[in-house]
Length: 232
Image (cartoon, rainbow, N blue to C red; front, top):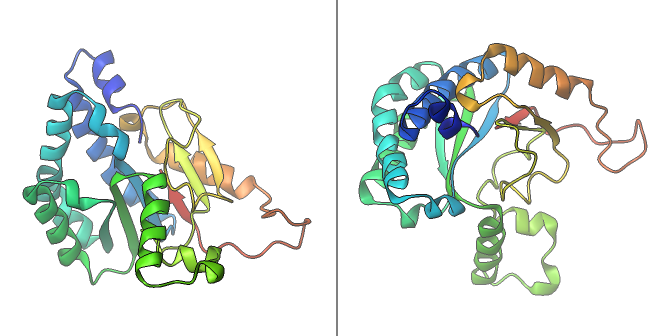
């Protein structure tokens, strides 16, 4: 969800206001994707690399978590959204961890759409922690294959994404879902995240619908998709 800071800077506003507007854009996007029948969304809210940003911005992002939950949790719950936090939450403050815990508990029974919030997440971290967990479980190295390792990743119970959406004009993965994005279609747009609206949702899904998904096989011989999962 790139472009919050640039959106604010272009308007002479503090960067944190851009992140707040990004939360509003996320709420709109969840509603739009849900109305289109998307059942799984994963958003990159805070990466393991984001700790290197200026301390005031990092502190502001952390304080935004409980604030956003207070403002939008009930609304999202009424829409049937199940919220989950994905990442190394042990490095977060008790206040932020408690906000995520309440979020998960409050929406645990919802089934219309699952929104995974990747926070303090990194694709390389995910692969490393999956290997460590497999080793701790005593998995024989000779028996370790892709299917087995997948069961230890942070999104083990979530279908691999069919579609990656990245805003803000960047055209790279930036350490997001490196294991899971192996066969995802990728949609890049110049739009800054706070500007992302229903028309952008329509364009992204139209792009996905235009793609012939082969999964490395011959045309007409690819396996069915695991279910539409738009990832921004």
